Amino acid sequence: MVGAINACAFRSQRYAHKQHFFQSTITIGLSRSEDYVTLACGDVTNTFLKERCRTIMAELYAKYNCTYCQEDITGLRVKCVECQEFDLCLQCFSAGAEIGQHKNNHSYQFMDSGTISIFSGRGNWTAREHLRLLDAIEQFGFGNWEDISKHIETRTPEEAKEEYMARYLDGNIGKHTWPPTESYKPNLTDQTSSDHGPLSPDLTSRLPPLDITPEEAAQLGYMPQRDDFERDYNHEAESLVSSLFLNPAEDDDLDIALKLAHVDMYTNNLRERARRKRVVRDYQLVSQFFASSRKEKGIKKKPTREEKDFSERLRVFAQFYTAQEYEQFLANLERERELRLRLSELYRYRENGITRHEECTHFEQVMVQTQGSTEATDHWSAMVLGFHFYV
Image (cartoon, rainbow, N blue to C red):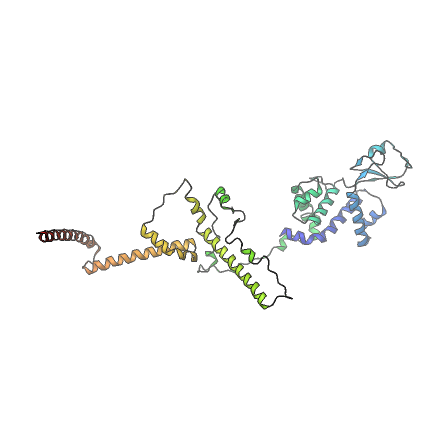
């Protein structure tokens, strides 16, 4: 929110920034020209103010050399009022240097190109650095602190951000430019229902992350920060619409219908891609794939053959459920099968006159003994019949 407000309000704020700098420069006595005094008093038009802004910005970015010793002047310099474009460094001025038509008794001015500090306190930012900061934010945009730092040349991105936030957004200039940022915060109201019904938002949860190691993610081509894969399902699906463009002057109804069909095909591919990602994430198929190669394996009950066949037949329905719903679905069907078997046993007990649970154990023992005797009798009868047949 703060970045959006800053970006929108910066144009109107920059005028106040520069005017504040120029008035501060005049107040501390850096210049005595009538133009600067008039500028500080505020009795100039906007056109003249803009022209003076351009002139002063050009002076701040300009490089000056001492006319006598030809050394670069980075700080305070002495400008001759009577000679054209004649500047001296402090060392040459103190020595009374004369060259050409310049004499050491000429009138002069002390000129500073922005090496003093406008604001007192921490940082010791110079006026030149502040102007470079404002110019960089207007040029590169709020938040692009890397490029802003390179434009200032003498400050880190962290220092540039901290200075701008402290001096302009939260400082006196920011307070007089726009209202506090708290007044821009939207008042959000939850309009959803929480009745715990089948479509309740309480039941909608974020998909769980992939349970894999960084090495496995690199092997799979998975990018955790983007939550995406290097190659998606049907990776060339974008080729359906990459070369499409509408030309109302030349396209007839058939061409438009064909292009819309391509868009519809591409949309279906995107839906299928999203569905497959959801299934892979929800059922943790990737972690199951890599689990076979891991050394540490948890003890898990091996399913029976009947359970495996039962699960294989119902696997086609997994695409219509989440992992938790599918596991619950299988558990319910298994429970139904167990109840059916139990009902058949109870029917058999009732048919044999068993009405109490205590009698079930005795009945089963008798049935086992009876079944054993019957099998022995049948075996003996078969042997006798075989002997008579042989004789």
